[in-house]
Length: 423
Image (tube, rainbow, N blue to C red; front, side, top):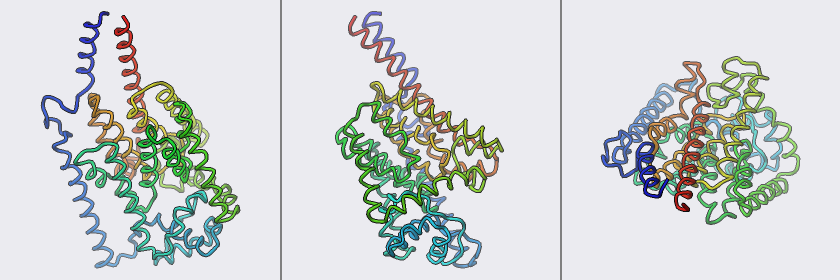
């Protein structure tokens, strides 16, 4: 194939598979940049209506059955309280933790154990210096601000901040009181820094280890891409934070954490967790009443495929936006224990896909799929809980497949370009 023929082939291929951001009919697509303000504003209007209804039931009707907002932040505050009193190890004792949670909430609460490694105690340590009603909003809205900053850095656009704030994953974390926005921001920031400041990137990745099930594939990606400085910084960062936590809170906290590690998985295995909110292969099969052995084998296969995808994307040259998207997506397919509030990572995933599309154009149907990803964090609460069809892990699997296929196409096109150039 001569060089002129190759150029014509590549032009036709791009026209068939991509829709560049500067398409000839701006605004014609329902997800065009000009219309991006409509959908997040509609979501914010819905959140406002829900907030008004909640306030009405709380203040006017004084509904005793109304759940506490940011209830999952109670273990953070209560563990902080115990740590400030010099009894950090008692955070892992639910019999001691529960009365403190109920004191902070001002009413009885459900089963809310502290399941995090002692390194996360370093994050939440100062929370109990303030009342729960003040500390929780500071923690949650502070992590939201960080999330918005990271997303706008990855995919700068006049409406990116609005989309990040209205993202259903953000709303879910704020109402649940979880740390999904924090972990998503840290992995996103680490990927932003990786090429220019690998040591700082490694330190960001080390902080993600506060939720170990989400950081398993990061060292594999760094190893496959030979990012030695980032890998070394991550290793030193994890070791240092663990050492500091042991020095601050005692080695008993580490022993207690290891002892409690099986508790989270047992919640999923026994069905004590809300399985419709667990977007993993294991959780989906358990919701369908599959045997635990079968669910475990399927989850192991999911983890192996995710690791293979990361090795494929990071082991050879690829567009960095696609590499980053693969790592973020694959990280959600490893652990059997994941909750819908961890799907805030979809916000970072969307940002990296858009980052790549700004230069190379959107694939056909890709914008519609990004809308699915944007809405996916609330799928468990709105659809799976009623339909009892656990499709949420399929969203991550399908997205990872699409990304790997796109990388394969681009590598093939690059190889043909190199061959034509050398001919």
